[in-house]
Image 1 (cartoon, rainbow over the protein chains, first blue to last red):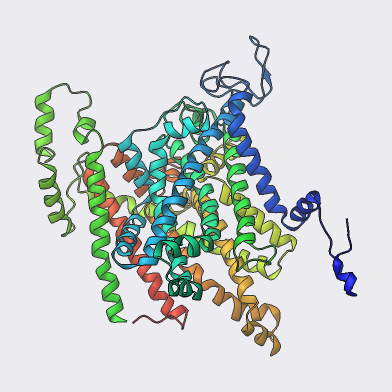
Image 2 (cartoon, each protein chain N blue to C red):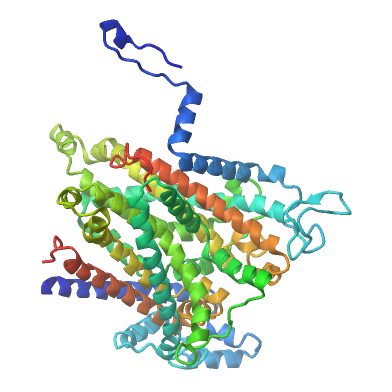
Amino acid sequence: MATIASGELVGLPLRVRRRGPVGKVWRFVRRRPTGALGIVLMALFVTIAVISPMIVPFDANRSVGRPLQSPGTVDPRTGKTFWLGTDAVGQDVLSRVLQGSQISLAVGASVILINVTLGTLLGMVAGYFQGPVDYVIQRSGEVWSAFPELIALLLIVSLLGTPHTTGGNLLSIAFDLRNLIFAFTIGAVFGGSRVVRGVTLALKQNDYVLAARAIGATDTRIILRHLLPNLMPFVIIAATAGLGAVILGEATLSFLGLGVAPGTPSWGQDLSGRNRLFFREAMWVALAPGTAISLTVLGVNLFGDALRDILDPRLRGARGRG
Amino acid sequence: MTSYLVRRLALLIPVLWGAGTLVFVLLRLLPGDAVTTLLADSQNAGDIEQLRRELGLNEPLAVQYVQWLGKAVTFDFGDSLLSRRPVLAELRQALPISAELALIATSITILVAVPGGVLAAARQDSVLDYAARILSALFLATPSFWLGTLALVLPAYYFGWIPPLKYTPLLDDPLTNLEQFLLPGAILGLGSAAVALRMMRSQMLEVLRQDYIRTARAKGLRGAKAIRRHAVPNALIPLVALFGNEFARLLGGTVIIETIFNLPGVGRLTVDAVTKRDYPQVEANVLFFALFFVLINLLIDLLYVFLDPRVRYV
């Protein structure tokens, strides 16, 4: 849809193409096909996580049929189909995969939200004021990074107790899983604050900070009004990059039997325990949760990459990066 | 340079002290202790008390801490509460396994990521570039435990092949040993290669736009040679840190892959020790991991003096 812009009125051969919403979406899809795929996968993941209690065909927490039924088997009692088969204890694989998304999203999103708030705050304080606060944060970060990650998670989760959730909405699941979320948050905050600190150190050298100080702006005002908005792109980029890692981390911990309590529908959990004994005969039990993890993390990462291309000022305009 | 080295080495002390104290405190806070594991079936309170006294677990925490710290500074970590063997002996037994795995994995990472990243960048937006990017995005998103599971299940299902599941030391039977290590090494290596390839590619893209590449081409260097001689070495500089870090991380053990492929490495040793509350073993393993981690990072930083003439430490 091309309209003639006012440029022509003053004799300039200026034609500006105005795009409608559909045109804009189409342009984005053409320019960043992987980013578009990421957004679709992300949207699918979030939607399924939110509505899964309503759409699961069977109760995901209970044995609803005979064990190890192959995909497409019809349950003789209820007449319903096990589209992805049943697992080692006769639970419906599809229901568990759908409901497992709730745990991934609840843990992932909570950790990232806390990390964005806390990590940004700590990083800005450390980078802006430097001095003793900075020293303590930096040294604690060093100790933490020299600590084997999985062992740290394992220690914290065993200390606080393996969390159990009976499902429900995302908020109540996140509350049930607070121990797990706390364990992941510690490591994430150290990493996140380090990124923010580095950027803050660079940003505060800018003339506009000096100008603000010259007209008498307080530290709080400089941090909130001048530094924070300029920091946001980096924070958003670091946060999406972290989301995939947390989802993988939760799956890994649950796979080891150290994340959510046994029996809870979680992708990592479904790839371990009794199910493992039957993977050779009943491959669908292994394929479904694993594919779910891969597609979700792939979606999150692609989405993050597209976001980085758009938000990172150094990459703005660079096409087909990363 | 010397004063830099001294300062960096001095930094080891607070890091090791911090990591050691952290693990000491966290372990003691965990419910239960080694005695509960050892005498799980025994109902005799007298037995339990006696064993606790023998192992020094009934002292006040502060006393235990001071005793532990005093010994730890002389690298005496005591005996495992479970096997009663020195913890360092246990660690020495597990370390070669994790080291071999780390070496194979890191080699695979370098062999895949460097040429892959260079080709993808040199032929930007070609089919090859897209293939490399999509593959690395997929590998990045696939958890190693699922890949490990598939690597065991699929060949068994289609070809009836299962990798040897009893650990054979390299010197006893090199072929069986390699057959056993190659698959887990490849899974770990390809996982890291996904990250490294993306980084190599974006580094190359940045370097290829530099003036010195244009100069090299202007003076008549063929494309491939300009890339090999001038672009690749410069693009590789930041990746050295990545490879080094990855190696250090793998040396600390990879619980998942070691568990799936039944390799008794450091990762499994540590997790077993945590679940059985074998305090000295966990403490020693964590401290050695921290030591390796800091030293390897220092080594990388020193390497930069040679790799990048702009880097100077004073």
